[in-house]
Image 1 (cartoon, rainbow, N blue to C red):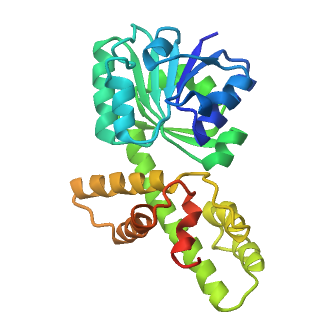
Image 2: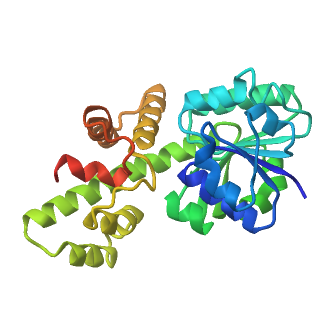
Length: 288
């Protein structure tokens, strides 16, 4: 049995790690703050003091950190993964990050004889907890096939998109779609409240028709309860939208709806200081 290393024990990482542990895998973890790893340590994961220490004792290494600069540090730092990787290891970055960075990690990894995949996910905290995530993969198809049984332990759908960076491009398409459903959810509830409708009934009705979507079903009820706990951090979603729009610009595309979503989340995160709330906190721009 392969020993798994996992760097990043946030909301999503914790759910994935717990599913890997449930399937009997030995898992060693690292996080910048050890206290944030306590939940998975209590469930049987082992601790490593650094990315280097983790790399030296794992066959397959998953990373799921916050921002592209965190990915760069974890992979390219002096105490990072690539400086300590050995031939034959598998490295899987599940962070939503830049396609160009995924390509860079893959190129350096190839020189060191390691297998590299970019594999961002969709499904939020619920998908991570329930093992029903959707995974979008870039890299060598043979490497994905080698690891598919592991992916199946925490996901319901694994889609291969092509060479390095392709998984990240697919995730950008996903985040562009989510931008629309989150702004739609927010404005639907703002409108319904102004019209003095029963908001719980509105959510039930819309979820039963053509307006059904994940954002409405997952985050609508949380909003009504005043629950802004992050299933996905608003600051991370803003990061994703910025990456998506940068990639769109590079391809000569104009995405006005996504640009407006980025503006709104920028107001929420940068101006209101609410980046550690969940994405559903967007409604706070209207409701106080």
